[in-house]
Length: 135
Image 1 (spheres, rainbow, N blue to C red):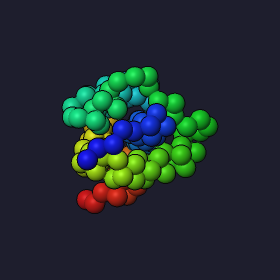
Image 2 (cartoon, one colour):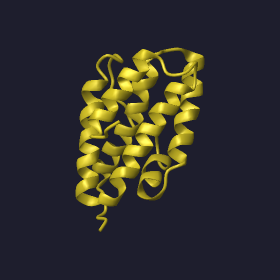
Image 3 (cartoon, helix red, strand yellow):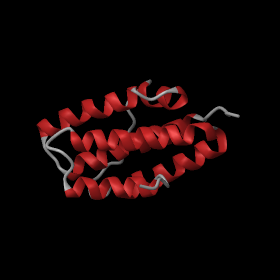
Image 4 (cartoon, one colour):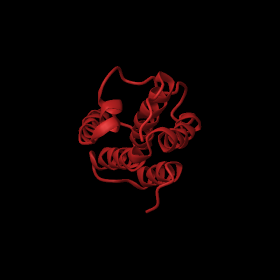
C-alpha cells in the first residue's frame, strides 16, 4: 500500500537522485561532458515508471548541496539512504524502481563521455552502497 509523500520527503528523494548524478558527473569534470551527462541522466529518469517517474520528472530541479564537490557526498549519501527508508515506509513497491532509476542514471552519466573512468566507478559503488543495492 502506498501512502502519500510529504513535500519534504519528495524533495529528499529528488535531491538524492539528482545528487547521485551530480556526484558521478563531478568525478570527471568538464563542460562538454557535463552537457552530455545531463542529457543522459534526464533520459534515464524519463524511462522510469510510477511514483518514481513522477517524482524525478516533474516540478523544479532540486536544490543540490552547496559548497565544493568534495562536500557533496556528506549531503547526498545520507539523502539516498533516507530516500530508501521513506519508500520502504510509504511506498515499498517503489524501492526497487527508485534504486534502479538512480543506478541507471549514474551509469548512463558515467558512460556519456568516454566511458566509465575509475573515479566514476568508485563514486557509483558508493552510491550503490548508500542505496543498499548489491552488485
